Image (tube, rainbow, N blue to C red; front, top):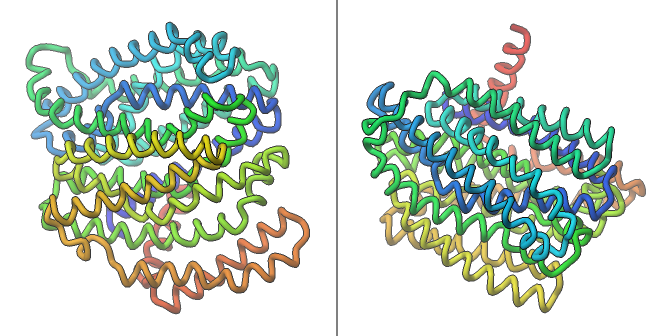
Length: 487
């Protein structure tokens, strides 16, 4: 098994564990809190996610680009030290914005409860900004195992502190304090882990900072616009509807987290290696990742579309069954996730193009969201996000072809993708009739999902979508995990 595949697999495993624990937290909170309190809880993270995306620029992502290019250990320490200093200042700015903007945010979100929760929550970014840099530094240094362990540790802190507090008090103020304490514990790990990579600040420390800013600012602006585009539907729903309605929408209006875990893990490993490799080798690495991603993306998108209602009811309870509609709409984005298109531009240092595309996406998304929400209510926001996501990918592909002068067929394997899509669709013919005979929703999901998996694997093997070395890769990774557990 190649080192890249092993690192990506390790990160995916850690993030799957993180996803599982985070899902348990979400399930418990959805069943313990009222829809209004759950809406407030999710709005807090919406606020942080939006502000941090705006304020943090592209500094965490720049670690994946600059650290692999560092000439020696001293250069690494300079990059890490100056980035941590800047991030600390940006964290303070984020905290102040939350503190002083609490009343404005509460009014904008139609949620008076936020005005009492946000002063406590404003402490959160002071700690959590640094933890994001820690993960990026470890990945930039190609130490995927440290990043993976930290990911598991972080979500475990949330599980123990946040869920434990919710079980005892069931009061949002105590839950927010638990979120802050969990962030502090995570900060301690990150602070100690980065201690050996820091050096005292001096004029020399900022040598090369201009080049980092030239890369980071355009990327950061594009990420800023990208975050706003992704969060725009939820922000608008918060402005138009009540917190309890937002809770329903936010539970369903998500891309399948498992797919995001896979793609983010693969890309976190790919970017440092694409940045450090011969540009002519870029297409080979990228094409291989697209093919492997599709083996998981296509069937998972299909099976979750089939059993969306059963999945939502099982995870969050029947009170949130209507969230399945938004979940199904968002699943229409998943076929695009076989690749991350901006990673090619980042690897080649073309971050200004990424920024331009993100601005286009934001403008289109804002206009379409407003129009469709007015016309169709909450589902209009989901339709708008899906439509703009497909459109912006077409723009990316056009730029790859004509601006970067890349051959799209060298990046995307069309025959393999077409056969994979066929293998994902064929099982529907067998699954729908059989699963329809099962009355219980949970067993319908389990039975139908199991039947789909078997049918897909048979179809994928028959069409040679899954190659012998894919099976060997999965086998070697699983054996590696078992050996580590025994040792």
